[in-house]
Image 1 (cartoon, protein in one colour):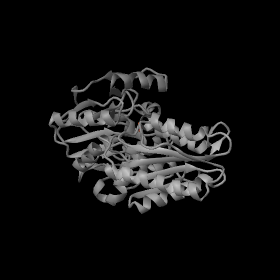
Image 2 (cartoon, protein in one colour):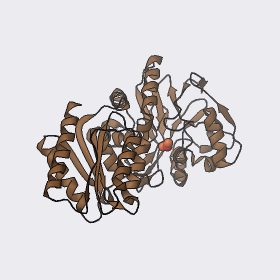
Image 3 (spheres, helix red, strand yellow):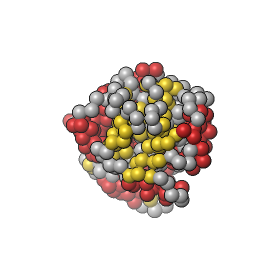
Image 4 (cartoon, protein in one colour):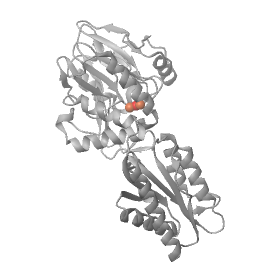
Length: 397
Ligand code: FEO
């Protein structure tokens, strides 16, 4: 396995995880796999920016060795301690035990907690610089994008921003740059990554991008820690992040439901019919049969959410519970929504759905709609009107 040149004396020495189908435990499905990107800078100090997930250490070391003996690494920049970037450190340190680490103060504490060993660690903060020979690294803390320790590193002489998780995508490929893959796929994966991981931190993302722009540093390339790096169009992904971080929406409705005996599904179809006749784009998902990551991606820019469930025991059906908890954690803003469902003798599920939707930050714009056992013709007509009304509200923006 060989290193891939990124710029003069800067090499990609990461790993490609073709088989990954889940990330963050099982919270995120990665249908295109992922990469763990690490970068080697050859200067007076041999510097490694980030590392890879533990099981991929050997792949990273092989790539490093294709350029330079691994024991020559004397500086390691830990932009982020999450194991997909730090997992290789214990093994790597067997090869270069004298390497000095740099990262945020939180990263220093976190690495000790993860790996239960004392590192030669120097905490750095925004504005600090490190000379590594002819080149200068400048550190930019980005706490809570998306962990407290998160940081970016800017290589001044080359204009490369090592952005860690920001601007990344879960996209396994042998290509390394944005101009080498289909733009549509790249943007789909970048948006999916933002929606499922970074969405709750949008207000901070807007602030940090503003701060970085105020630094006036030329960004010729964004070298990410997952997927492709942006050498052709770094401005394009920054513009997309700016748009996403202010919760931009489009007139679209996503219906997500779970059904026990088909009544809630019947309601969902009729609601969708009302939306269709009002001329609004929409999608309908039975969450028990759909990949949550893809549903969240579809909801990312939609203005309207309609959620439904049959009553089950004393609450919502379990797949829908899981979905609603995930949605709540994402804190969608500037969205409108409503709930619906069917029940036999306790309509608590529909009430709970509405409450969770509200707790997630969605504005409830019409009373929940429920039916006992199965909808009759007049109730189906009410479902149709329910969808139509939501569509009219979504059109208003
Ligand atoms: Fe790619 Fe937050 O780890």
